[in-house]
Length: 397
Image (cartoon, rainbow, N blue to C red; front, side, top):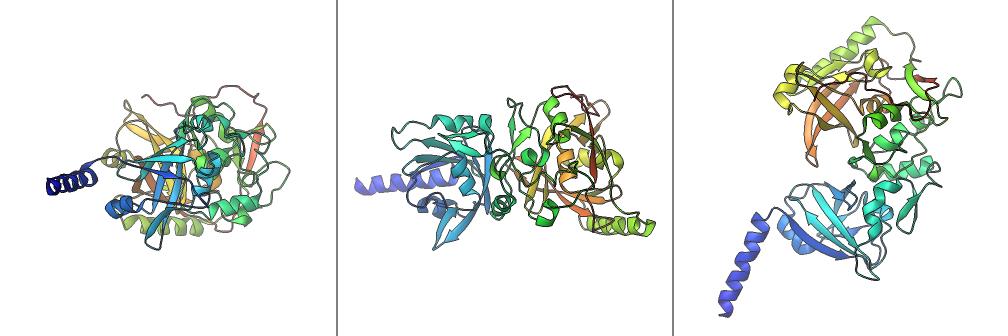
């Protein structure tokens, strides 16, 4: 009888670990939990081959934090990016977390208070706070513009990219990089780039003051917010267009950048190249994708697309027009162009990458006409706050 029970137990374990789509485990937060958290040994022994180096933690709010895994003494830990997850949810010693693994690269996390063993109510409303200082599980506005560049750089050392998640109910989103870039800028020189006047230039001037941690950035999903946010400067003015500060360039320099991009694109049958034009980098900010490539590689529907350079990622919106059979990147492209200081005639090579949380990824390589650049200057208009703006290229759904 005993042997039979053991056989049944072994059979159940084999079925569970080999065939169940979702696996759960719980962890109580003990000493030093704010720096790293160990994943149960049994879980790792059964699924270690499936676990990627970087995973997404999805909180009850629906937001996602990307966290790197590290191995130490045969144990696997949530490490890089875990600190932000802990801070954003105001986790305390002895809190209980329940993790639900989706079999790929995402864990859904539920959080229970150590004092009453009930769910932490505030964990469902992290998206509504959206700032940087925590009080009783919520983030307050007081420090939303006071994060130093040192803190930003320290955050970027955690590695990986934090995935953006939709938020439809927060009208306060304004600054481009602060809300849309997933990984902070790591080049201090770019953050401190000089400007010709007191006007903010690009997003580099404001990049040192992030209103949210890198791991909890949200996607602008509303048409009004998506159109307004990239244009609004810290002074309240709206950046409609940008003026290049780049020195005069030669035809040889343009050809060199294009040739390098073509060589890079030729190494993969799935990649394509686009030469930047004013409508993509100075005004309007939309980018049509090659229709043949789209038909062969993408679902012909509106969808989110993550643009990735190394460990930095931006979530954008791909909009498809079924009538015209064309599609392009609209909402979010401006954030990408602005934060990477793209200029006319720069060449970008795009290639499909490994999806992040079931979102289509395009890895991007930039070939600049001039490597030593000065960010373009934003020109402002007196558009009153709250005025609705339409997307430049509305497409039928």
